[in-house]
Length: 113
Length: 112
Image 1 (cartoon, rainbow over the protein chains, first blue to last red):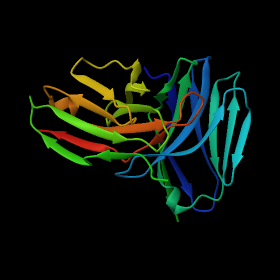
Image 2 (image 1 turned 30 degrees about the vertical axis):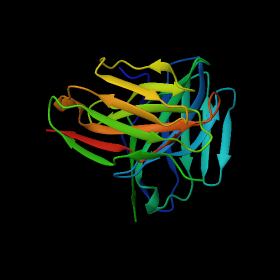
Image 3 (image 1 turned 180 degrees about the horizontal axis):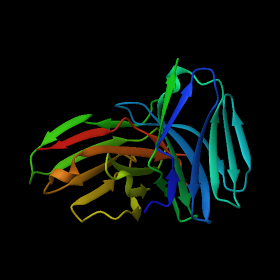
């Protein structure tokens, strides 16, 4: 099974906040990422956090990391229809494998008017 | 600054053929990683190159190979194509350790 797990679907109303959750199992993870994928497109890096941090905020995006529970979340404030996409959580592990990302299955976010 | 470019964007091949995909990283980036994305298996790591050396390899058969040139451009090759190789192949580039990976738009490979 996958070492990075995400819920598969999230429906949110426009203007509300979205929270996408992710759990990982490798305690040696050094970087944790959030990517966005729109239909027919590649992956767009949204934000990332080092595993020694607890929180990172970037405009409408807030990443929270609970190292004890190995839980990562992405909060999108004031969700817009353009935020509809698949969101992937990913981790890179250990200093010798920093070029290898382990992805979750992705969370499909649907924003309704 | 131009992003990661991948060519071709779309490709249709038949079983048994081989294919070569190309990736040009962001200028100055020396690390290139390749991923396969399918509806069933999701995003899976293929291999990663840094300064022309393969640093990591995923769990794919030997039919999948790659290389990196001195200008950091990378190619991946799939020989003896199978139907199951139909996928979106994504390339990502990075400055190196401790730096984020930026993805290209992908090459959509269809094997008939």
